[in-house]
Image 1 (cartoon, helix red, strand yellow):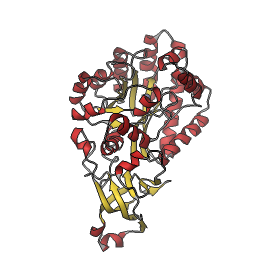
Image 2 (tube, protein in one colour):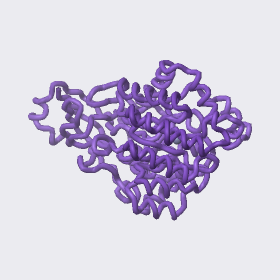
Image 3 (cartoon, helix red, strand yellow):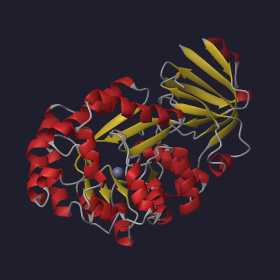
Image 4 (cartoon, helix red, strand yellow):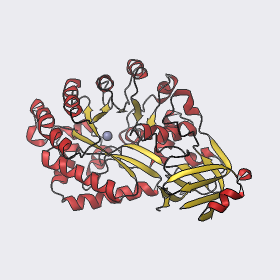
Length: 415
Ligand SMILES: [Zn+2]
């Protein structure tokens, strides 16, 4: 089955198939073809070009031709850090925050992650799946075509496995690429309060072997930060997970300069995420690694925290990624266009840099750069279309104006 999209106003995010990430100066370039066509075969991009180069051969081979009438085509967003599987919401804590309590104070009162764990425990697996699918469908409609989803609101063996099974169901049923991450060390479970060492033992000796045996996770994550897990705890967990082939993706430097970047890089982390409080020392360490620094401006916005030093990282030649951190406590939104707008407004990324960070580099932070994140021959035909736009900047400038007209996954229009 071949589908030809013709009269595309702008085909954004074009690369060679060999491009799997963009680092440093390369992030300035978001190559685009104005007045373009795109040919899809089954689930893949077969070819593309400018309208004046569209020969009869391409037109004749198409089973279906769609006139885009100047609409734009973007590669789907690749959201490499989310917690979309959770029960209920934490709007009550939203009020606490308005009334001045800090994230740490709310966590100390037994709220925060433990509150979400209690709710998740009381929610059936089917309900949890349905609630998560509402969010997944929402982010697909907003242009996300690949998503990483973490466990971490279970905090017991049974409930962590329950979350990971829900993530597997999402992978099997939703039109989106899904990567699964085991985050048993998101917080110390309620039954282990005051016994952090014992809880880390539970994660290493019971949770990880069971997750590994059932092949429920691609990655392992640890909340390595002040008030949560130490670099030593983190190393212990990463050692245990490595035996089951789970590579690290680490929560680091959100609340303090935590040592999480160092331990992540030491264990060849695919990404280190958050990085609101990163110094030149961490940037220098990342330069000597293949780890993708991933910044989550939605959490900075919601919690009133500093924004990560994305410009410093790009100047050091790093491949910065952007992700939503969609979760009930610190970033209740998975809108990647808003994440890009925040990156431009608050971190001074150009729209091209922001979109590269949210597409090709997000794909790299999920080891999907070979298949997703750009418009390239042979990559998956995962993209969204918009109304004709006056400029690329307008897409992020008018960040609440509805513009997305359709979403395509693996060569099919899905919304
Ligand atoms: Zn997170």
